[in-house]
Figure 1 (cartoon, rainbow, N blue to C red):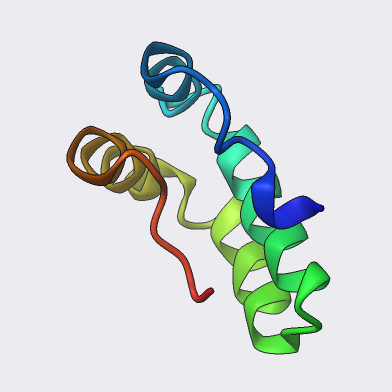
Figure 2 (cartoon, rainbow, N blue to C red):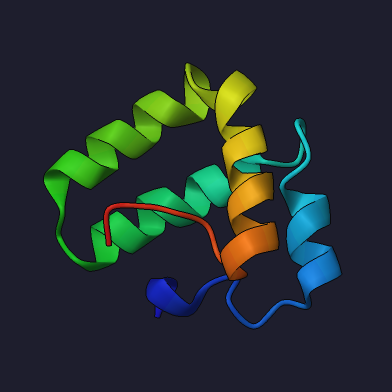
Length: 75
């Protein structure tokens, strides 16, 4: 269920959610995707990236959504 979270959103909504303050949504999606697949490394990395890497990952998310339509993660 969590693996489909955010995939059905329109492109403009995905891009808005990738902006610096709102990018917390994609951080939570990463954690939920990893939890859904029982990926402990992904969960821990997602939590770390949620707090530490948010300043950089919003730009990575924005570019990935523009190019592929989805965020990049350890899926």
